[in-house]
Length: 270
Image (tube, rainbow, N blue to C red; front, side, top):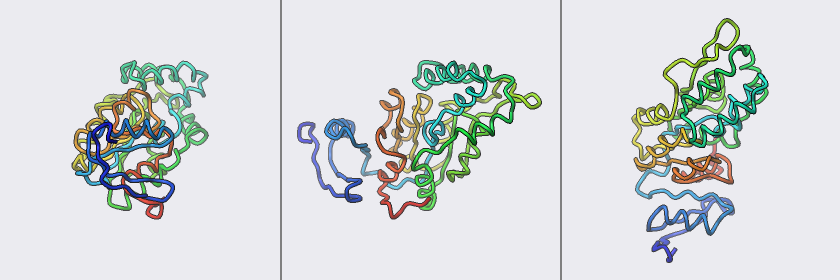
């Protein structure tokens, strides 16, 4: 730490052998870089000591964050188009394509797919990421609000939100014609701007907010949380999202976000 002009004030185990707290003075990004270099197999979360550690709001992305897949890619597999759709998804999540345009292009490829396939896909393909329930339900049990906001679709997001324990959900809808998908998405599209707006509109002080996501369309909400003194965390993320975030969870599951807030295992709910 001395090499970057930082001073360690105190250090202790949050939970023996699992999570360690360091209180330091110095430049946050420099401290993060130094710790990640020194501890490459561990997740590092550096946050301001002037903000409340236990957050009162969590706003989370769904696909590849709260759940282990991209729903539109899995849905496309039932139409024999997963390779084509997944390539567009990957490029959009890396920030190489306009999100709304990429979404419309992918949904157009699903035109004619039976609506019943949505339920089938959800039941067969959608699995929660480890720690999702514990993260949201523990925060809720301690008075936090929880919002699931997704550039994906309501037929997936509503059941996922219910299963995890989110209080509110916002996602895109799919137009239908009879019993098949119409291949279009009604406006307004839930995109990066909508995610950021939802975070800011909640009314919770930004210093008491936690935003988490994995893709380029999560960057504005992550940066809004960080700018307001809260936590903006990338979870097993694409490079641009990881670079924009305050911390990048690369190794552990979603309970790392509970550790960052000072919760020990005995506190966990779910």
